[in-house]
Amino acid sequence: MVKTLQDSSISLHEKKSLVIGSYDRYTLIKPLSSGDVDLLIILHYGNNKDYENAEGTIKMLDRFKYALSQKYTTTEMRRDRNCITMKLSEFSLDIVPAFSY
Image 1 (tube, rainbow, N blue to C red):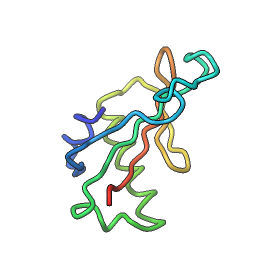
Image 2: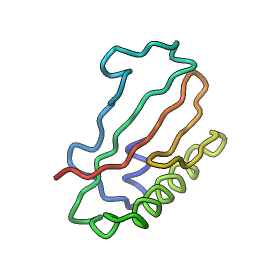
Image 3: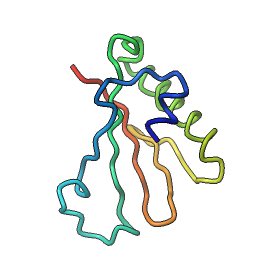
Image 4: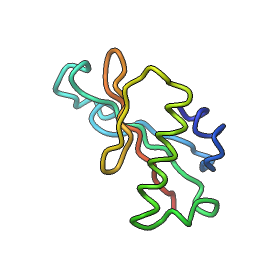
């Protein structure tokens, strides 16, 4: 996922990504097949600061979705309020863009 986004000219922070949420904390109550995994993609602030506003959030999510859909052509995905949700065979993956300050 990270490589796909990086290859699409989205400038990422050197940390690039973190798995967050209940899966990372081992507190996932539901079976993984009905739950999700949250992947935080850390953007390079200086190269993406134009996206730090309400319109920019939607535009960045659209860029994420476009880049991912080019690579994962048969994977169902949608833009949610703060993430791109990909429906994988065994679980859902929520990809969340964020800045590191």
